[in-house]
Image 1 (spheres, rainbow, N blue to C red):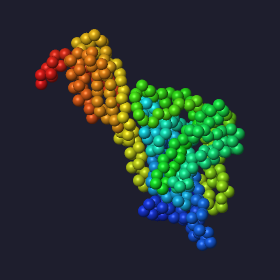
Image 2: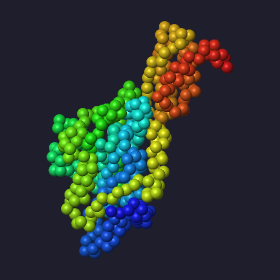
Image 3: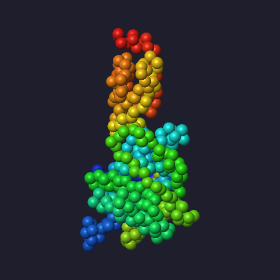
Image 4: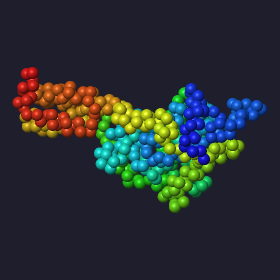
Length: 381
């Protein structure tokens, strides 16, 4: 097994302008046989196992590999797991997909990944698999079949991939979701595997606000199961990780020289220069909230007596885009008094361009309760 320092040093030394890696990395330094055309050589396979359980570090490592590695001669299986967290797809709304108030109270982070797909809950009972290949060799069904074969042959669990590329068991109980990112020359496909995940926490964590109107990607709810409940005590994250890694390296009965074994990696900037910047970006509000597609949310806001008129409340809609308020509007303006209509317009003007927060409706309610004389004075300014 290579040391982490040697791993990083070799990686930097052997990467060309486009991230190409020479044949000396992780394997023999001997040159290809002249009798075998280089184009026909199967890619060498490497299994990376993360020593981190931090979701942002592991997602950053995925992105670092995708941006810096050439997969023309190598394919990678990256195996990793995280401390409790929620991971949403690149084009999703965290307010819709995750129970933000509950997660904040529990200190559980929400991360946005670089691939599409739906929201997932991770904890130490969940194993994540990322398959990196050249774009021309991308084949997610092959990856899913590899996982199903491991579950069938090594653990006696009859698993199959459905039409949505989920892995299911029994009566279509989902044990794995899937997502991918495809570039011009490189691609990766990653999936989750529920082994001994806390299903109650999973359910609570993914109870987002479904009243928000969006045009973004929706997660599709499915009944789930833990592989540990089916495979018994022999099914653990550690045993599944070992089986997947071993099968990935040997399933094609390659020349042993093409299988480089398992390599532990520590996804930090010390070992992979530039990874720290990627991780910082993934942690930033500009990425997590700032990439949220346009959405609208309507709430009933109570009115003070001076503005109530025939109704004690008003329906207020807030529209936001990329985490920034675009508009605040009164939905039942035809029935509202002129004072209320003008005041909501003033509030919309003052909030436009500010970051959207779940407490915005409390803010609007408080602004509506400004003493009436101040409303009148402002109208003459």
